[in-house]
Image (cartoon, rainbow, N blue to C red; front, side, top):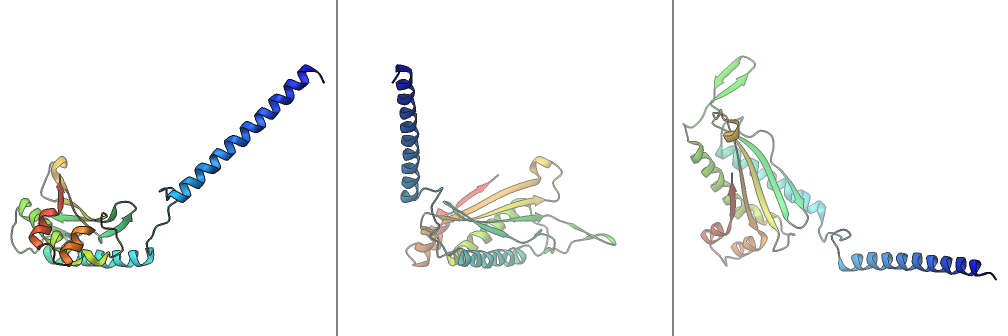
Length: 203
């Protein structure tokens, strides 16, 4: 057999061995990911049907509280909507109009019926207080969540009287951990202590 032919055979054997090695490596990596519960392949240990139902119930409760707190019929634009974010928890969002002094109708604009003038700061404070109480009273609807996961209420609050576009909308994020809810439910912490642990971001 010629030297050239032997070299060709050696190269082919080396290439085949290399391909087999690479394939084996990839198979090993895939098995490691599967067995280690990597986020790319992990199966949620949740009953998503129950979680969806609980989220819908909580959405309804948030909507009812907002309707009672802000009686203007056009304050809440649409329903509160929630979803589960893997690795974080449940997020419920809504859009709220405040200071809506006039309502558009087919017959023109008419004054809105309100309980009396309240400042922007007062209404934002009222929103925060009502949503903190909502989390305390109804957050345990999400029994499946892990202790470190969170329940977050995100509000986009639009001031209808503000002309400056950069100040027109205020975003308020109020969240608690499932662990703190468990402690409150079992009376291991008071409502005041729970309130202190709530995370509030407003900007």
